[in-house]
Length: 492
Image (cartoon, rainbow, N blue to C red; front, side, top):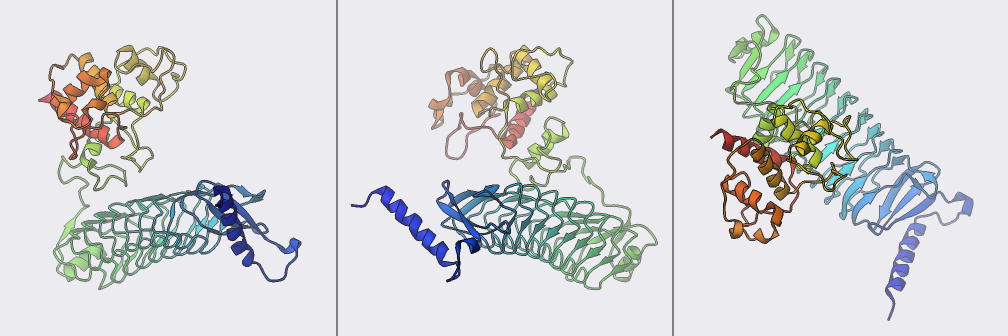
């Protein structure tokens, strides 16, 4: 019977024989250009051209892949065309800092790819590089990117969040066509050209603002965006192209600036019942009058209803906690992780929640008390932690450590909020029998009273499977929702 080690050795030899078989029939050692790298985390292999620094491909990759900075001492500088095309088992990719270009079709058809982490120095991404990566949900393109290839993310049907860099001047043909899950996208100032079909059939987008830097809008750019309702064009664009918004059946308000001096006859093909917002005596007003389209002098109101709250975040549209996140943001309780990224599913940290409660209290003047070795006054959360600890709301994990970057669980949230309510002299006598939840036994003793109170006041609720998940980390979205419920409870 062959040993497991023997089986592994045979597997390695078989893979190496395949790789060697790709070499020319006649060569000498000096002519060998490929070096091989074994990835223990997924059992796969990478091939690098040592002369050019181009990663040319891989074999047997299942699971996450972290591409190393160097292979056998040679720098990885770029990823070649079709290097990982149709590798079905690849789930995530981390690209090293030294990579400056990603070729054509590199991850095309990687149906299990859910996450891509760029190295941060990529200048170009080739055509169809991530086409049909149907599980990819979020991307943040590097700030160094200046060239994006045709249909780079076409067919990424699960893609919800996209962050485009200010360095990108041209959005290519079919760049995000068919990305039906995108609900909002911020087009950066500095973008000059959006080529044909770039967002065609992105049926989830509801509102688009075209930046003032835009010089050219191609044909069919937003064709088939059936949920698009508001289109705002900032002053700069001279012409709306053929069929640019055809099939946008719910488009109801279009703001057209004085810079627009030409609108293709079919730009709004198939649309009816929409209103143009424009200045008097502009081409847009003349176009509206000539085509029997209602025209309002002025701009689309940012908030038709005082209850509507706008945020800069591109990753919360359609999220179950969208309204609660907007509430928390508008009340200056919580900010984004980045200027346009809220990251609703990221975990709430102890330092973050101390800051949220301190803001909820109105950031009262307080003296910093250096109670913990891992919290300094200069940290953004320094005064918040000092205030929360001094008032017995959030305690340290030991006499000297606060552990600011530790996640808080749902029961930790309940305990901290319960203590805050006591600090505010709120009535905390409400109690509920939590034994009806399937996992009630997982509630720790220190959290029993707080969880009972939080359930009784409906600040914390169970989920449809009749569990309350007391030890699960609380997400940033959950905290916004539960905090809003607390405020509503205290106001009633």
